[in-house]
Length: 276
Image (tube, rainbow, N blue to C red; front, top):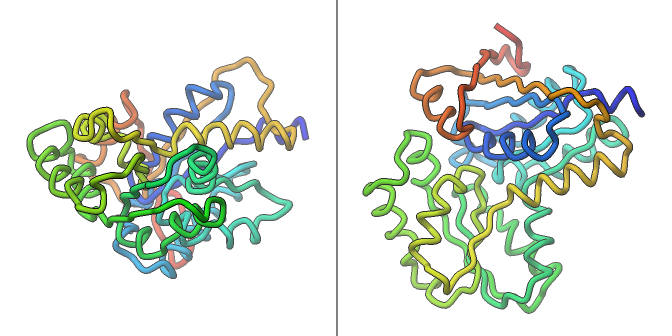
């Protein structure tokens, strides 16, 4: 297993949001090589059918496996809802799979909240995965879910920490069912970018959670359990790939990652991703 420990960790999302996970992994596991795929040709996943997203996820995971990845992080809630079980079955014994839903749900279920809100894309809310998963662990908890369809696209376009984002967030967060929640789950990896604005809206009466820290801890735990941690003292390398390139995406990616991100282009060739 020692040689496998030197293999990269693969991470994928439909666009920019997964970079919040990449940045956290790079900070927490500085010796690990990271390989990120943003399937920008198909964004946003949240507006696609779960069947289509499941197929994209499987094909991207095949690309990452072919690149030698020892573990893949499904850094997208919609893709996690659509494909986490299928990817675990498909890669059993060959590549570890971590999604962004399970670690957060398990963490929240262990806390003493009675009323929880969830905001996410249409596809994630339509799957009902958060409510079902929470109720499996905590039948007593009340879960109120809201599709916040504009948020991911708004963030992708660079609208956050300004009057436009505050106005959009106010419209969503004033949802009547959220009036007496104790916690709000940000069930999209784009949303940590606007977490400070969401926390400012609720003040101290609502705890706000995203999946980034719990996912990092799950990755660390899985690698340690499987003896796959990279024991090298050298700094790990991060490589970033997208299936479509635009200058605006480049600019927003650098805001997400907080430094220059060299993007390399992939193309869908039928059902396969190929380097350009």
